[in-house]
Length: 415
Image (tube, rainbow, N blue to C red):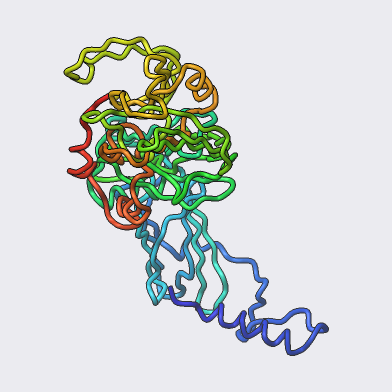
């Protein structure tokens, strides 16, 4: 946008005041018009392509303001909706035309402020208001945030589930721009497209301990793609507790539990035996169940078992738990005998069950098992490098349709 002669006059005047010192309190423009002159009504100097009367504007069509006649020019245009969102635009070098360069929101109320000047440099102003049309409900894209409001561990990702698939890169970028995540204390983070209807957000590192995370959306009325518009989204607020991590070494058969980096317990355990080795990697606690029935039929195991298990803390969707295993106390701390779960004494399992919460971290190392997949079997988000995580953002570095072939191959459920 070019600057008008009027603005250059103001700058020159400011310089003159500074040169004259404190005694100089006012000055006029070189053309004799006082700088404090009240702007005139520019209604007769401009034309606007917006709706007339009670009609509503088509949000698919750009706004346009043009200068009428030869006795003036447009110097500035601002357009905002009731939520304070600005509409980007371009003003021609000669000040004869301004047009919007970003889509309008649907079902929104807009205020358009136009500034002009005449041939003498006198300022003009005009404010216009209008509403935009609301698309049919079937054309609306809804977003549902997760988890539910509450207190979680520092490993809990934010999830966003869309009501319709979004595949186009530009459409994905529009969605991402509207989704806001704010952490106090602050934490660098990014969205990652798991598939065309699901996004996850995580920080570069884990969330800060005892943080407050607010998740919101400005997608309401925003055009996402062809005939698809965003709608209002319920915001989400949750907090984190202490940083609690349980690290299981499958080769030494011990679990060490840390709170904020300090060891608080060390527990003898048994993990998956050959053929059922426990997955390596970072898992996030998904939930807790006081009692769970586990059977060989659920995983297709050749050796029969049917057990009622207590103090069960779930870490994968396919049935991997940390739980009480009183039948294997002789092996705990010495050998791996389970079908993939991490077993411990009833007393230790009860302690673990009462100590951890959803979103806490459970890491397994030195197992002969496969790696925990990033997506598709719980929350393995932390097993992807930050560099690759950013590649799943439409704004930062492209998109990703879903789990890699390697990840998908790893999703063989076992307990």
